[in-house]
Image (cartoon, rainbow, N blue to C red):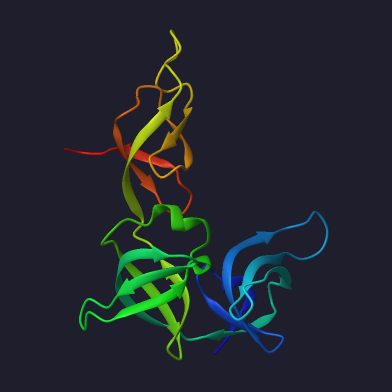
Length: 188
């Protein structure tokens, strides 16, 4: 299905130069002179190689239709993620690099959404938020107000993030899986 380049979004699968690519990031760039263009970071589905491509906003690209299927994450086996089909209980292995940096946010029995093109996994979506524990955080600086600035902290999955000054080591917080940003304190 043809679509305009300015409608490309992360997670979509496109065909370009005879190969299939999954879109990792896209950004519309408006230079001072000339027309706007789309900068797209994408990964080759067969080789796993990443590349950047630019299109003018009026260009069209071939978008492949994907089928969404929910799986339950079981465990990681080397470079593969082992997922279970919640209906048939069959296990499926897919390459971990399909998820990129999001692998750090996988948790046991997490429900994930896998995008398939003709039965082949091409992309994977995590839930938008996860609850993690703070394992390292800078101490509060006297006189620092909650609204003034965030401080660096390390989550139990090893990912670094910025949290408000009142968050301390041992607290559980809600974090966005797409950019590892702090959302709120976990309830309960």
